Image (cartoon, rainbow, N blue to C red; front, side, top):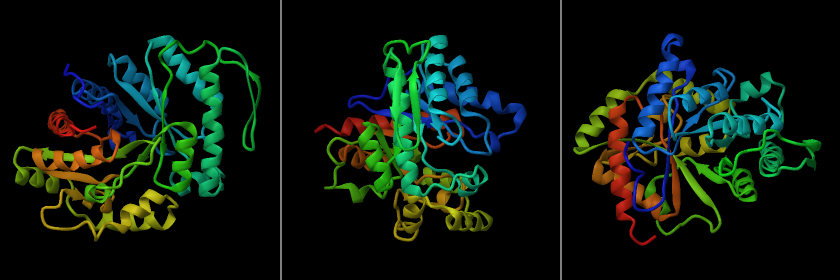
Length: 342
C-alpha cells in the first residue's frame, strides 16, 4: 500500500460506483474493487451516494468496511430518510463491529422530484436549518455517554442515550455542502468541512478561504505525462452528447441546487485553448463535478492554486479503473510538494 500523499496534510476521497449505473450481478464486486484501488493509492475515504434511485448507502458502506483495512466510507445522509438517532446508531455500530471510522456527508437537498415524492416541500434555506439541528443531535449522541435531550424547531429528543457508545478515536468527520450561503453558514456552525464545486483555479488566487472554514472541493481529474494523451482519453471517455445536454437542461429547470446553477453559468466562460478546467462531462450530464485535464505538471499547478487558497479535502469522481488512481495519486503528490509556504 502506498503512503499518504506528503508533505502537507490532505484528505483525498474517491467515489463509489452508483448502483443505478452498474449491472446488479457485478455491482458488489465493482464496489469492492473501487474501494481496494482507492485504499491502495492513498485515499482517506470513499463517498457513497444516496438518492431515491440507489441502494442503501449504509449497506454499501458495510461492504467497503468488510473488504478494506483503513478506508473510511463517506456516507451521504439525507434527513428525510431516517431519524438522527438511526444515523448515530449506524456510526456507533460500525465502530463497535469493525473498529472503523466513517465520515458523514450531510445532504440538505437532493433531486427535486425525489423530495416531492417524499412530501418534503421545505424551502432550500430552511432545509439547512433542519440539517443543523439534525447533525447537532447526531454529534451529541456520539460524543456523550449520558442521555441527550434536545428541543429544536424540527427535532426533539428527551433523555435519549446511544448504546453501545462510540469507541474512542472513531468520531466521524462531517461534511456539508458549502456552495450556498445557507450551506456555508451551517458548515461554520457545525465546524464541518464545507464542500464546494470549484470555479476555475485562477479565480482563487488572492481569495483564500474564510478564516475558520475547513474547505473541500469536488473535482474529477484526468492526467498523464503527456497532456495531449490526457485530452484524448478525456474526449473518449466523455464525448459530447445531445441527449445528455437536453437531460442537463431539464435537470436545471427542476433543481434549486446553488452549485448546479453556479457550474451551469460557467459553461461558456470556462472554455479556452488548453484550459485544464473542463465542464463537458457536467454539461452533458455524465457526472456532477468539473474536471481538470492535462499533463501531470499542468494539473498539479491547478491543484496547487486550490491548495494555496486553503483547500485540504478533495473528493474525486468515480474512478473508471485502477490505473486512473495511479495517475491521480502522482498529480496530488506533485502538487502538494509544490505548496511549500503553507
